[in-house]
Image (cartoon, rainbow, N blue to C red; front, top):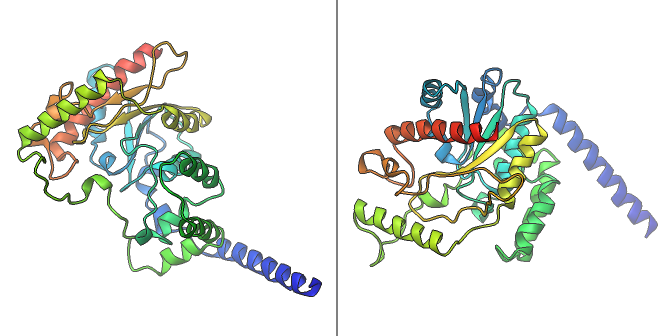
Length: 318
């Protein structure tokens, strides 16, 4: 028995040293290289937008122009990734800020997809999914499943464990290097084709009316989600010496806002573009794409609105 245990120990040590060697030898994964566009701006960026693919549509130049017009001259930059949410978003924020942005003052985080988990079987062992399965993800996953957000089956638990092991054995880098191109990632849930239903809005005006009705119900019933997730992301930013606001993008479904109160000493700053009554210019036919995303004209309008909303809230906090 003792000899068997010794063999297992020696094999484990061999795998550990082998993984360490691979980690040093293998170059950075393509996903890390994909941050280069953002990092080239890190010496001038003052406001960083980060979040799912909605952020990709934002136009930093439009934000900069509007901010200058308001006497709030700030340079913006962005990082948006398909389906960036949950711990994947938190880790990406940490990794990006670890690079150091000398002039950065604010991070505006898109939390439209909330604290949800992207772990569908068809994406298992893809480099991006391996990348966020660090030891730090374990307590987040435990909290997520214990809250009853999704049933944790044995197969899924083992898959998470395999991803953590893959992360620390450089399998993620190896898979990325051996792939033929950028990793295929399952699209945002809001982009999936939806089956036609009898009560589904058929025209643009119907969709707007449905959203207005849903949003009014949310306000009247004071329906909210916990603000903890936004506060947790804000804490990451503050550990790097910058403040953070959170916002929702102008999607079609009525999303419940995080619970915030002006009575709190340090309330979470939240901007809700998911509101066709307050931001009608984001819900006209000429600015919408075929999904929840805005077209270039709409994204330019939202970028200017972000400058106005951030400027107002920034002034109140100073």
